[in-house]
Length: 206
Length: 206
Image (tube, rainbow over all chains, first blue to last red; front, side, top):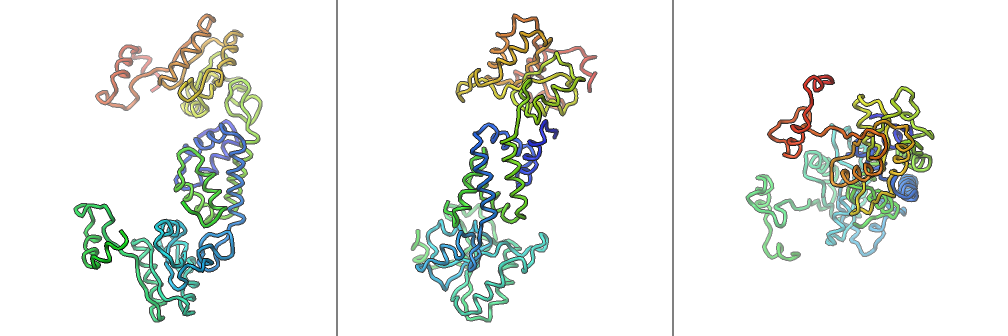
Protein backbone atom coordinates (compact mmCIF):
# COMPACT_ATOMS: atom_id res chain seq x y z
CA UNK A 1 0.00 0.00 0.00
CA UNK A 2 1.46 3.34 -1.06
CA UNK A 3 0.53 6.44 0.92
CA UNK A 4 0.59 10.03 -0.21
CA UNK A 5 1.60 11.17 3.28
CA UNK A 6 4.15 9.91 5.79
CA UNK A 7 1.91 11.01 8.68
CA UNK A 8 -0.96 8.98 7.28
CA UNK A 9 1.29 5.97 6.71
CA UNK A 10 2.56 6.08 10.30
CA UNK A 11 -0.93 6.34 11.77
CA UNK A 12 -2.21 3.47 9.61
CA UNK A 13 0.77 1.27 10.46
CA UNK A 14 0.33 1.84 14.20
CA UNK A 15 -3.40 1.19 13.98
CA UNK A 16 -2.76 -2.03 12.03
CA UNK A 17 -0.73 -3.39 14.95
CA UNK A 18 -3.99 -4.00 16.80
CA UNK A 19 -5.30 -7.57 16.62
CA UNK A 20 -7.87 -8.18 13.89
CA UNK A 21 -7.20 -4.79 12.27
CA UNK A 22 -5.59 -5.06 8.85
CA UNK A 23 -4.12 -2.24 6.81
CA UNK A 24 -7.33 -1.58 4.92
CA UNK A 25 -9.43 -1.37 8.08
CA UNK A 26 -6.77 0.78 9.73
CA UNK A 27 -6.92 3.19 6.78
CA UNK A 28 -10.71 3.33 7.02
CA UNK A 29 -10.54 4.10 10.76
CA UNK A 30 -7.85 6.74 10.34
CA UNK A 31 -9.71 8.45 7.47
CA UNK A 32 -12.83 8.42 9.68
CA UNK A 33 -10.90 10.24 12.42
CA UNK A 34 -9.75 12.82 9.87
CA UNK A 35 -13.38 13.60 9.02
CA UNK A 36 -14.32 14.07 12.69
CA UNK A 37 -13.53 17.10 14.86
CA UNK A 38 -9.95 17.21 16.18
CA UNK A 39 -11.21 16.73 19.73
CA UNK A 40 -12.28 13.14 19.06
CA UNK A 41 -8.77 12.09 18.10
CA UNK A 42 -7.32 13.93 21.09
CA UNK A 43 -9.78 12.24 23.46
CA UNK A 44 -8.98 8.80 22.02
CA UNK A 45 -5.22 9.37 22.18
CA UNK A 46 -5.27 10.73 25.73
CA UNK A 47 -7.64 8.01 27.00
CA UNK A 48 -5.30 5.32 25.66
CA UNK A 49 -2.14 6.98 27.00
CA UNK A 50 -3.66 7.65 30.39
CA UNK A 51 -4.95 4.09 30.67
CA UNK A 52 -1.55 2.64 29.79
CA UNK A 53 0.27 4.98 32.20
CA UNK A 54 -2.02 4.94 35.21
CA UNK A 55 -3.66 1.53 35.11
CA UNK A 56 -3.25 -0.62 38.20
CA UNK A 57 -4.03 -4.20 38.98
CA UNK A 58 -5.71 -5.17 42.24
CA UNK A 59 -2.96 -6.57 44.48
CA UNK A 60 -5.30 -9.30 45.72
CA UNK A 61 -7.16 -10.60 42.65
CA UNK A 62 -5.15 -8.98 39.78
CA UNK A 63 -8.31 -7.48 38.29
CA UNK A 64 -7.87 -4.12 36.56
CA UNK A 65 -8.53 -1.41 39.10
CA UNK A 66 -8.07 2.31 39.72
CA UNK A 67 -7.18 1.60 43.36
CA UNK A 68 -4.69 -0.65 45.16
CA UNK A 69 -7.58 -3.02 46.03
CA UNK A 70 -10.40 -3.38 43.48
CA UNK A 71 -14.04 -2.62 44.26
CA UNK A 72 -14.91 -6.32 44.44
CA UNK A 73 -12.15 -7.32 46.88
CA UNK A 74 -12.82 -4.28 49.07
CA UNK A 75 -16.58 -4.90 49.22
CA UNK A 76 -17.36 -6.31 52.72
CA UNK A 77 -20.68 -7.69 51.45
CA UNK A 78 -18.87 -10.25 49.25
CA UNK A 79 -18.00 -13.70 50.57
CA UNK A 80 -14.29 -13.37 51.22
CA UNK A 81 -13.69 -17.11 51.49
CA UNK A 82 -14.96 -18.10 48.03
CA UNK A 83 -12.62 -17.44 45.10
CA UNK A 84 -13.49 -17.94 41.45
CA UNK A 85 -10.44 -18.51 39.20
CA UNK A 86 -10.81 -16.89 35.77
CA UNK A 87 -8.60 -16.27 32.77
CA UNK A 88 -8.95 -12.52 32.29
CA UNK A 89 -10.97 -9.50 33.25
CA UNK A 90 -13.55 -10.09 30.52
CA UNK A 91 -14.57 -13.23 32.40
CA UNK A 92 -14.96 -11.22 35.60
CA UNK A 93 -17.23 -8.79 33.72
CA UNK A 94 -19.29 -11.66 32.29
CA UNK A 95 -19.76 -13.30 35.70
CA UNK A 96 -20.55 -9.97 37.35
CA UNK A 97 -23.23 -9.36 34.72
CA UNK A 98 -25.10 -12.47 35.88
CA UNK A 99 -25.57 -10.86 39.30
CA UNK A 100 -25.57 -14.35 40.88
CA UNK A 101 -22.01 -14.66 42.16
CA UNK A 102 -21.18 -13.04 45.49
CA UNK A 103 -17.63 -14.29 46.13
CA UNK A 104 -14.25 -12.93 45.03
CA UNK A 105 -12.19 -13.54 41.89
CA UNK A 106 -8.64 -14.43 41.02
CA UNK A 107 -7.53 -13.34 37.54
CA UNK A 108 -4.77 -15.58 36.15
CA UNK A 109 -4.00 -13.35 33.16
CA UNK A 110 -4.07 -16.27 30.72
CA UNK A 111 -3.89 -20.04 30.46
CA UNK A 112 -0.91 -22.38 30.41
CA UNK A 113 -0.18 -22.79 26.70
CA UNK A 114 3.24 -24.11 25.67
CA UNK A 115 2.43 -23.45 21.99
CA UNK A 116 2.01 -19.73 22.70
CA UNK A 117 5.00 -19.75 25.05
CA UNK A 118 2.89 -19.18 28.17
CA UNK A 119 4.12 -21.19 31.16
CA UNK A 120 2.89 -21.18 34.78
CA UNK A 121 5.49 -18.55 35.73
CA UNK A 122 3.85 -15.91 33.49
CA UNK A 123 0.48 -16.37 35.21
CA UNK A 124 -0.76 -15.21 38.63
CA UNK A 125 -0.65 -18.74 40.05
CA UNK A 126 1.77 -18.37 43.02
CA UNK A 127 -0.39 -15.71 44.67
CA UNK A 128 -3.42 -18.00 44.33
CA UNK A 129 -1.62 -20.97 45.90
CA UNK A 130 -0.39 -18.70 48.70
CA UNK A 131 -3.93 -17.43 49.27
CA UNK A 132 -5.18 -21.02 49.62
CA UNK A 133 -2.31 -22.08 51.90
CA UNK A 134 -2.90 -19.11 54.21
CA UNK A 135 -6.20 -20.80 55.10
CA UNK A 136 -8.36 -17.77 54.28
CA UNK A 137 -10.10 -19.55 51.39
CA UNK A 138 -12.83 -22.14 51.88
CA UNK A 139 -13.75 -22.78 48.25
CA UNK A 140 -11.98 -22.40 44.92
CA UNK A 141 -14.17 -22.40 41.78
CA UNK A 142 -12.46 -23.06 38.44
CA UNK A 143 -14.11 -21.05 35.67
CA UNK A 144 -11.57 -21.34 32.83
CA UNK A 145 -12.78 -22.25 29.36
CA UNK A 146 -12.90 -26.01 28.83
CA UNK A 147 -10.15 -26.25 26.25
CA UNK A 148 -6.94 -28.26 26.44
CA UNK A 149 -5.17 -25.19 27.87
CA UNK A 150 -7.92 -24.47 30.38
CA UNK A 151 -7.96 -28.07 31.60
CA UNK A 152 -4.15 -28.11 31.88
CA UNK A 153 -4.18 -24.92 33.93
CA UNK A 154 -6.94 -26.22 36.22
CA UNK A 155 -5.02 -29.44 36.81
CA UNK A 156 -1.71 -27.63 37.42
CA UNK A 157 -3.31 -25.48 40.10
CA UNK A 158 -5.28 -28.38 41.55
CA UNK A 159 -2.13 -30.43 42.14
CA UNK A 160 -0.65 -27.62 44.22
CA UNK A 161 -3.68 -27.02 46.42
CA UNK A 162 -5.27 -30.48 46.73
CA UNK A 163 -3.55 -31.15 50.08
CA UNK A 164 -5.02 -27.98 51.56
CA UNK A 165 -8.30 -28.03 53.41
CA UNK A 166 -10.14 -26.30 50.53
CA UNK A 167 -13.19 -27.29 48.50
CA UNK A 168 -12.31 -27.26 44.80
CA UNK A 169 -15.24 -26.97 42.38
CA UNK A 170 -15.72 -26.15 38.72
CA UNK A 171 -18.53 -24.29 36.96
CA UNK A 172 -21.25 -26.56 35.54
CA UNK A 173 -20.90 -27.72 31.95
CA UNK A 174 -24.00 -28.71 30.08
CA UNK A 175 -26.55 -27.79 27.46
CA UNK A 176 -27.03 -24.02 27.29
CA UNK A 177 -30.47 -22.64 28.22
CA UNK A 178 -32.54 -22.47 25.02
CA UNK A 179 -30.38 -24.91 23.04
CA UNK A 180 -31.87 -27.90 21.23
CA UNK A 181 -30.57 -31.29 22.42
CA UNK A 182 -30.27 -32.65 18.89
CA UNK A 183 -27.67 -30.03 17.94
CA UNK A 184 -25.58 -30.38 21.10
CA UNK A 185 -22.16 -32.04 20.83
CA UNK A 186 -21.82 -35.53 22.32
CA UNK A 187 -19.27 -34.67 24.98
CA UNK A 188 -21.40 -31.87 26.43
CA UNK A 189 -24.60 -33.91 26.24
CA UNK A 190 -22.87 -36.91 27.83
CA UNK A 191 -21.53 -34.79 30.68
CA UNK A 192 -24.89 -33.13 31.21
CA UNK A 193 -26.58 -36.47 31.82
CA UNK A 194 -23.77 -37.76 34.03
CA UNK A 195 -23.73 -34.58 36.13
CA UNK A 196 -27.51 -34.21 36.35
CA UNK A 197 -28.87 -32.24 39.28
CA UNK A 198 -32.08 -32.52 41.39
CA UNK A 199 -34.97 -30.87 39.54
CA UNK A 200 -35.77 -28.65 42.52
CA UNK A 201 -32.27 -27.15 42.25
CA UNK A 202 -32.62 -26.72 38.49
CA UNK A 203 -35.73 -24.52 38.76
CA UNK A 204 -34.45 -22.48 41.70
CA UNK A 205 -32.80 -19.65 39.75
CA UNK A 206 -34.80 -19.73 36.54
CA UNK B 1 -21.12 -3.34 30.36
CA UNK B 2 -19.74 -2.63 33.83
CA UNK B 3 -16.08 -1.81 34.17
CA UNK B 4 -13.86 -2.21 37.22
CA UNK B 5 -11.90 0.89 36.26
CA UNK B 6 -12.91 4.36 35.06
CA UNK B 7 -9.72 4.61 32.99
CA UNK B 8 -10.57 1.39 31.21
CA UNK B 9 -14.14 2.49 30.64
CA UNK B 10 -13.03 5.80 29.11
CA UNK B 11 -10.55 4.12 26.78
CA UNK B 12 -13.12 1.54 25.65
CA UNK B 13 -15.79 4.18 25.07
CA UNK B 14 -13.45 6.31 22.96
CA UNK B 15 -12.31 3.29 20.96
CA UNK B 16 -15.93 2.25 20.38
CA UNK B 17 -16.58 5.60 18.63
CA UNK B 18 -14.68 4.28 15.61
CA UNK B 19 -16.87 2.89 12.81
CA UNK B 20 -17.39 -0.87 12.93
CA UNK B 21 -15.86 -1.15 16.42
CA UNK B 22 -18.39 -2.17 19.06
CA UNK B 23 -17.85 -2.18 22.82
CA UNK B 24 -16.70 -5.79 22.91
CA UNK B 25 -14.14 -5.31 20.16
CA UNK B 26 -13.00 -2.06 21.77
CA UNK B 27 -12.44 -3.90 25.06
CA UNK B 28 -10.45 -6.61 23.26
CA UNK B 29 -8.26 -3.99 21.56
CA UNK B 30 -7.68 -2.03 24.75
CA UNK B 31 -6.82 -5.17 26.76
CA UNK B 32 -4.40 -6.11 23.98
CA UNK B 33 -2.67 -2.74 24.34
CA UNK B 34 -2.39 -3.32 28.09
CA UNK B 35 -0.52 -6.56 27.45
CA UNK B 36 1.95 -4.86 25.09
CA UNK B 37 4.87 -2.60 26.09
CA UNK B 38 3.89 0.96 26.99
CA UNK B 39 5.72 2.27 23.93
CA UNK B 40 3.21 0.75 21.54
CA UNK B 41 0.32 2.70 23.04
CA UNK B 42 2.42 5.87 23.07
CA UNK B 43 3.36 5.41 19.42
CA UNK B 44 -0.28 4.82 18.43
CA UNK B 45 -1.52 7.83 20.42
CA UNK B 46 1.15 10.18 19.10
CA UNK B 47 0.77 8.98 15.49
CA UNK B 48 -2.97 9.69 15.63
CA UNK B 49 -2.58 13.08 17.33
CA UNK B 50 0.20 14.18 14.99
CA UNK B 51 -1.78 13.10 11.93
CA UNK B 52 -4.86 15.01 13.07
CA UNK B 53 -2.85 18.12 13.93
CA UNK B 54 -0.42 18.34 11.04
CA UNK B 55 -2.27 16.74 8.13
CA UNK B 56 -2.66 18.88 5.03
CA UNK B 57 -4.66 18.50 1.88
CA UNK B 58 -3.09 19.25 -1.51
CA UNK B 59 -4.39 22.66 -2.55
CA UNK B 60 -4.80 21.48 -6.15
CA UNK B 61 -6.32 17.98 -5.95
CA UNK B 62 -7.39 17.80 -2.24
CA UNK B 63 -5.47 14.55 -1.78
CA UNK B 64 -3.93 14.03 1.68
CA UNK B 65 -0.40 15.37 1.59
CA UNK B 66 2.49 16.40 3.84
CA UNK B 67 3.21 19.37 1.54
CA UNK B 68 1.19 22.25 0.08
CA UNK B 69 1.15 20.42 -3.28
CA UNK B 70 1.01 16.59 -3.23
CA UNK B 71 3.64 14.38 -4.86
CA UNK B 72 1.32 13.55 -7.75
CA UNK B 73 0.40 17.15 -8.66
CA UNK B 74 4.02 18.27 -8.33
CA UNK B 75 5.37 15.45 -10.50
CA UNK B 76 6.26 17.01 -13.91
CA UNK B 77 6.18 13.55 -15.54
CA UNK B 78 2.40 13.31 -15.05
CA UNK B 79 -0.01 14.55 -17.69
CA UNK B 80 -1.19 17.83 -16.20
CA UNK B 81 -4.16 18.17 -18.52
CA UNK B 82 -5.92 14.90 -17.62
CA UNK B 83 -7.86 14.87 -14.34
CA UNK B 84 -9.51 11.82 -12.82
CA UNK B 85 -12.39 12.65 -10.45
CA UNK B 86 -12.57 10.28 -7.45
CA UNK B 87 -14.50 10.11 -4.23
CA UNK B 88 -11.72 9.84 -1.67
CA UNK B 89 -8.05 9.12 -1.20
CA UNK B 90 -8.56 5.35 -1.08
CA UNK B 91 -9.60 5.53 -4.73
CA UNK B 92 -6.42 7.46 -5.55
CA UNK B 93 -4.40 4.71 -3.86
CA UNK B 94 -6.27 1.98 -5.75
CA UNK B 95 -5.74 3.68 -9.12
CA UNK B 96 -2.07 4.41 -8.34
CA UNK B 97 -1.58 0.72 -7.52
CA UNK B 98 -2.54 -0.20 -11.09
CA UNK B 99 0.47 1.76 -12.35
CA UNK B 100 -1.44 2.50 -15.58
CA UNK B 101 -2.74 6.00 -14.98
CA UNK B 102 -0.39 8.91 -15.59
CA UNK B 103 -2.67 11.93 -15.18
CA UNK B 104 -3.71 13.91 -12.10
CA UNK B 105 -6.57 13.43 -9.66
CA UNK B 106 -9.31 15.52 -8.11
CA UNK B 107 -10.58 14.21 -4.77
CA UNK B 108 -14.20 15.25 -4.14
CA UNK B 109 -14.25 14.08 -0.51
CA UNK B 110 -17.57 12.24 -0.91
CA UNK B 111 -20.61 11.90 -3.14
CA UNK B 112 -23.78 13.96 -3.28
CA UNK B 113 -26.15 12.12 -0.95
CA UNK B 114 -29.19 13.98 0.37
CA UNK B 115 -30.01 11.03 2.70
CA UNK B 116 -26.68 11.45 4.50
CA UNK B 117 -27.00 15.24 4.38
CA UNK B 118 -24.16 15.67 1.88
CA UNK B 119 -24.88 18.38 -0.69
CA UNK B 120 -22.64 19.78 -3.47
CA UNK B 121 -21.42 22.56 -1.16
CA UNK B 122 -19.68 20.08 1.16
CA UNK B 123 -17.67 18.59 -1.70
CA UNK B 124 -14.66 19.92 -3.60
CA UNK B 125 -16.73 20.62 -6.71
CA UNK B 126 -16.24 24.42 -7.20
CA UNK B 127 -12.44 24.05 -7.46
CA UNK B 128 -12.91 21.33 -10.10
CA UNK B 129 -15.27 23.48 -12.17
CA UNK B 130 -12.84 26.39 -11.88
CA UNK B 131 -9.96 24.16 -12.98
CA UNK B 132 -11.94 23.16 -16.09
CA UNK B 133 -13.04 26.72 -16.90
CA UNK B 134 -9.46 28.00 -16.65
CA UNK B 135 -8.80 25.90 -19.77
CA UNK B 136 -5.87 23.96 -18.27
CA UNK B 137 -7.73 20.65 -18.45
CA UNK B 138 -8.19 18.67 -21.67
CA UNK B 139 -9.92 15.61 -20.26
CA UNK B 140 -12.00 14.83 -17.17
CA UNK B 141 -12.42 11.15 -16.23
CA UNK B 142 -15.25 10.25 -13.86
CA UNK B 143 -14.22 7.36 -11.57
CA UNK B 144 -16.93 7.46 -8.89
CA UNK B 145 -18.66 4.25 -7.89
CA UNK B 146 -21.69 3.50 -10.08
CA UNK B 147 -24.33 3.95 -7.40
CA UNK B 148 -27.25 6.36 -7.37
CA UNK B 149 -25.10 8.86 -5.46
CA UNK B 150 -22.12 8.42 -7.77
CA UNK B 151 -24.25 8.92 -10.88
CA UNK B 152 -25.94 11.99 -9.36
CA UNK B 153 -22.56 13.52 -8.55
CA UNK B 154 -21.22 12.80 -12.04
CA UNK B 155 -24.28 14.38 -13.61
CA UNK B 156 -24.18 17.43 -11.34
CA UNK B 157 -20.56 18.11 -12.31
CA UNK B 158 -21.18 17.31 -15.97
CA UNK B 159 -23.92 19.94 -16.23
CA UNK B 160 -21.53 22.61 -15.01
CA UNK B 161 -18.67 21.76 -17.35
CA UNK B 162 -20.40 20.49 -20.47
CA UNK B 163 -20.18 23.89 -22.22
CA UNK B 164 -16.42 23.99 -21.73
CA UNK B 165 -14.06 22.67 -24.36
CA UNK B 166 -13.22 19.57 -22.32
CA UNK B 167 -13.48 15.84 -23.09
CA UNK B 168 -15.57 14.12 -20.41
CA UNK B 169 -15.11 10.36 -20.05
CA UNK B 170 -15.93 7.69 -17.49
CA UNK B 171 -14.03 4.57 -16.46
CA UNK B 172 -15.14 1.42 -18.30
CA UNK B 173 -17.83 -0.73 -16.68
CA UNK B 174 -17.98 -4.39 -17.56
CA UNK B 175 -17.28 -7.95 -16.51
CA UNK B 176 -14.27 -8.11 -14.18
CA UNK B 177 -11.21 -10.02 -15.41
CA UNK B 178 -11.57 -13.65 -14.28
CA UNK B 179 -15.34 -13.47 -13.64
CA UNK B 180 -17.74 -16.02 -15.12
CA UNK B 181 -20.36 -14.55 -17.47
CA UNK B 182 -23.17 -16.69 -16.03
CA UNK B 183 -22.81 -15.09 -12.58
CA UNK B 184 -22.61 -11.49 -13.82
CA UNK B 185 -25.59 -9.20 -13.18
CA UNK B 186 -27.70 -8.28 -16.20
CA UNK B 187 -26.99 -4.55 -16.14
CA UNK B 188 -23.24 -5.01 -16.18
CA UNK B 189 -23.39 -7.74 -18.81
CA UNK B 190 -25.75 -5.64 -20.95
CA UNK B 191 -23.46 -2.63 -20.77
CA UNK B 192 -20.39 -4.70 -21.50
CA UNK B 193 -21.86 -5.90 -24.81
CA UNK B 194 -23.14 -2.42 -25.75
CA UNK B 195 -19.77 -0.80 -24.97
CA UNK B 196 -17.65 -3.50 -26.56
CA UNK B 197 -14.17 -2.51 -27.71
CA UNK B 198 -11.93 -3.60 -30.60
CA UNK B 199 -10.18 -6.87 -29.72
CA UNK B 200 -6.76 -5.36 -30.46
CA UNK B 201 -7.37 -2.78 -27.73
CA UNK B 202 -8.59 -5.44 -25.31
CA UNK B 203 -5.35 -7.45 -25.45
CA UNK B 204 -3.06 -4.42 -25.35
CA UNK B 205 -2.61 -4.22 -21.57
CA UNK B 206 -3.23 -7.80 -20.57
